[in-house]
Length: 199
Image 1 (cartoon, one colour):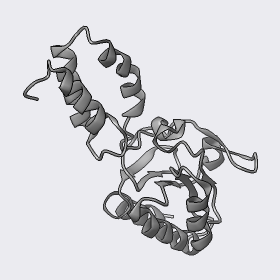
Image 2: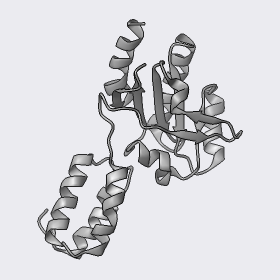
Image 3: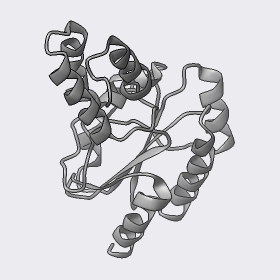
């Protein structure tokens, strides 16, 4: 903020704000980016990042339509947004190397057991190796679709959904619109309970 014209500020922005997983809010990233562009209008690196910022930081908000997606699973089957038409859907983004993901997977396992058939579930792992991912899935008996392309934060689906922190969940209603997005306990659980009660 104090030195937006400095090349060091561009470096710091890339290292601490631009990278997914930084935990920095989308609004703060945009604010810093605008300040840098204003101070350095001819900086090609900043201009180069513009398209990435638009796609990477598209945060889903309540009422937004679920982006269309098509994921090719390891067994070559496909999971598409249209598979969940007319049914609530919970998508969770997680990784075996992230501490909070383990308890989230346990909660989703319980949700799957208690509300089987009432809600669609889809997990997206940001793991880089198969061993960690499969260890958690085996332990928590993951029976619902679980996708991983082993690209972590560079995964196209992570960018498509604007995921910036882990664990991260998106709850979608039967109408295909986002009901809530964010942390499970704070953002998802209250809305999920209402949604399941109304069935």
